[in-house]
Image (cartoon, rainbow, N blue to C red; front, side, top):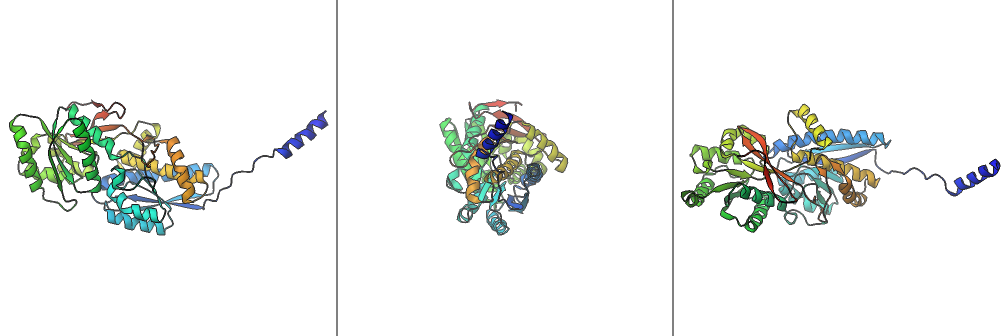
Length: 404
């Protein structure tokens, strides 16, 4: 009987042999390009994103080594200086280095500038910063993915915040930039649906405008009748770091606008340049800025500690999202088993849907953008950014943590 069992076992093994180990055709060095704004109007965000990217690269290579995969990820970092034209040149440089996959903390203007080149050369781009409406930067189904949601979510949150503070009248000034104009359109749509009154809707040349006298005078003229009637009105400064310049010039002219509450988009939140150049004035107008919110996952908390030790700052939401973009890119490449664009693209939707990182789950919609995220609001209090409110994407309600 024992002999028969041994014979039977041998036959069974022959019929059902152990599957061979999975083979990989990954190169020994896997290049990933990184586009960050290390100089220019978004530089403070770029510095924090660079810190999280460096951490991601180390973690990803440790993970790869633990699997016994003889490949190393190498990140090539390029500074696009917060300039769309430079972003295109930087992408071309990364492509010449062999990067078929690029991640980044890019502005929407930069994403729009690189779209055609990325599609033509089949370069996968996974961004953690751009939130302009998809139609304004790239068509759905192309080579660009975003692990943050589009502008419509931010417009709804801002409208809810104004209403929750009792402001039914808003005067808006917007930078003539791809992203800012997208936020402008998203806010106008949400504000109209909420029954709000848009007192002013003006734009200015960006980034060439340095004298905001005309902007300040126009806003003063538009809000004057409401102030005379005792009606509440707020300013929506849909701007970038140049809001510090406008605040300083308004202070010099003793503008009545400084008696109002100012709100801003996510380009302002936690910006260190604003604090350095106009912290006291921003405190006077409260300067409330919306921002995408990340749940306090263990990964999030660990990154807070590591980045703070590295550069003395806490990573903002875009630095966290850029970290997640790095992991989604690396995991998609590892799942593909080869540095092949078609295979990597096929893996990205499933990887993004299953991945849970520093910003939570990164599931993408059919357009290649993140499905949704909650929001939070930060305000300048005593020349420091403080978290003052949260916004639920589920019930579209704002909860104020600090009454301003």
